[in-house]
Every structure is written in structure tokens, then in C-alpha cells.
Image 1 (tube, chains in turn yellow, orange):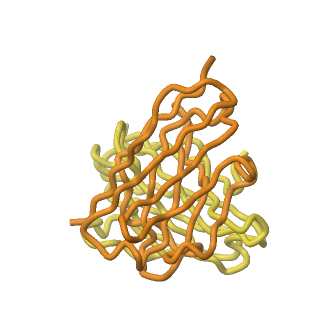
Image 2: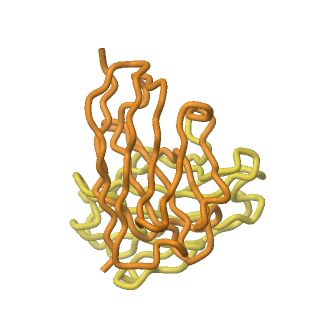
Length: 111
Length: 123
């Protein structure tokens, strides 16, 4: 059971927009701690996709966007492409646990 | 360029010990907080431990407290994870990861990850 809750899977047709939610609590996201997102392509190392809620590292397409409100955060992928098929994880800091917490991961499938 | 290279994984019996290392290059290692994150086969990411840039602060997930020790040698640009009393449920690929910004540790994400080293705990 992950501290941050994500849907196990989301899917969409090429070109569509999909969103992935990440729900936390008052000791992590709700306490104001930033949310970060990682993309893990099949058989590869996790890659930082979004940091501090809505900031894209250099090289990440602007099709990816992030937001945060209250105890939740979201990652949106616009103009879905086949290369976006991957697992996506949200991550934050939890003050009760004094450490990082991850979501369980969301598998994005391009139909 | 930034590189993180883990080593030390392998097959070990329950109750035994293993020491992982992560050799860093391409950046000022002594300015960055570092973490170990693991991923069990077919499962999601799980944070294991983190250490501040100077080694003065260490943090652990509850399931490894008292069994694992994170440390670093800034003179060698190397991060370590000493794993004692290993359990079957510790089986995973272990990644070392660098915090996004200098001097930070807990509230930011990781921008560079090693390729991982597989630890298998089995009798």
C-alpha cells in the first residue's frame, strides 16, 4: 500500500490527452511539499519528468504538464504518442515518515 | 557528464549481509544529497534511504531501520549502502540517485539515477 495513491493504469488513443492523479495526505502533499514525477520506459531507469509540481527538466516536451492542489497532484500528457507508453510515478516528502514517498505507479497505454 | 555506477549486488542468503556502492563522476559529489531507491521485480519504486551532502544526516524507510546503513566517502565520490540481516523481501534492483539541487536532500526529486544493481535474497 503506497502512501501516495495513483490509478494503476490509464489509456488513450494517439493524440488524446490523459491525466494521472496522485493523492496524498496532510503529512505530504497537503502539507505543502512539492510533487515530482518520473517516467520509466520498459526496461529502463526512472527519468525525472516533472519537478516541484509543474517544472519540466530540460529536454522534456511541453506536452507534459503538472499541477498540484490541496492533497493531490496531477500529471497531464497532451497529444499522446506511442513513445509515451511507460510507467509513471509521483513522489513527495512525508514529514511523518521523514523520507520520500512514492505512488504505486501508473501504466500508460497508447491504444 | 553525470554518471552514477552501482556495484555490489548479487545473490545472498537470508540473514546475510551485502554492501552496495555507487561511484559518482561528472559533478561535485560533495555538494549533493544522495538516495537509494529500490524496485522489486515487477513492482513500483520504493525509497530506501537518503544522506545529506556532508553525511551528517541520514534517513531510512521503516522497513530497513536498524538493518541498513547509508554512508558516503566524499574523497572517493562514492555512496554506500550496507545491508545486514537481509530478508527475502529485500530482493530488488537498487538504484542510487542524485538530488536535483545542491545542498538539498528531502524535499526535491532526483535528476540522475544509476543503472541499478540487482540484489537477490534467497535460500
